[in-house]
Image (cartoon, rainbow, N blue to C red; front, side, top):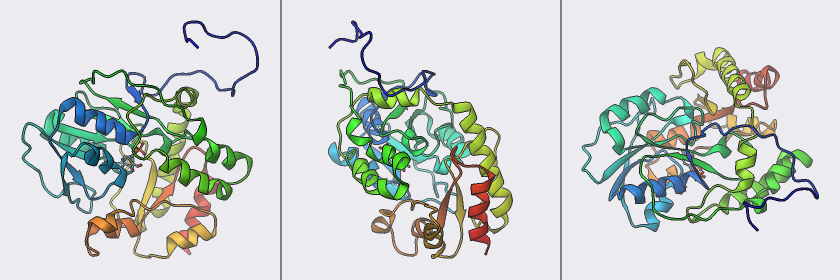
Length: 319
Ligand SMILES: Cc1ncc(COP(=O)(O)O)c(C=O)c1O
């Protein structure tokens, strides 16, 4: 069936409005880890410096292509503890943690030039800096089954097939139709279906959903919620957080000393992720990364919520 000869009439598809992609000029691929793989291949990197404090799936392309990597540590402000002298065929991967580290991205871009790879999986709204290989994972911000955006100036000479996403939709549908709890197993299964996939173009389904979103309203809502939580919780937050101009975070990272607060929130149906359980395997128990994994609560501030929900969270934390 050809896209050159589109259908007219017949039954309807899922009704989605047709706006624009937020990252309109980026390549559209299937996952952020595969954007990373694309860069590794297109630039022919032989070694990558990668933070201990990141998601395990980022190793998939390195293992697949047998590319050397070396972990580096971060400091209490989520910044690399030291600067590395890179060889020509080496890259430095930095994560824009929680969407609040754009200043550090700018600093590292000045230092490493285009050997920096910016992981904006947690920073959908942070702009690409000119010349920097930068990728995004929209499903951390919106209800899409998969998809990723990549900005790069180097291109692989492959004809990439297009992904399809319809078998990964159950969690999105169940969360609306049944409940968050009922869709959770589907979410985990469907997320793990993305493991070790080949590099593909973003599915039409994810493209359509992402082109239907009202990004401006979402940016405002996220910022307002973040600023609100910071005004209520900033004084007890052990992580230094500042609200920079234009910053649109993924979550409000609240660092606290209790290890039971996550559980308490969960008992009240407030679900807070743990970034990232794999860190425990890679680090020693006294390392900062392990502490951050256990003690940073990434509090939801997303577009589904407003002041009422933020107050529910604050009340539980403050008692
Ligand atoms: C910081 C970070 N980078 C990259 C990824 C990978 O994104 P994707 O699942 O789209 O490959 C994740 C998590 O999944 C992540 O947390």
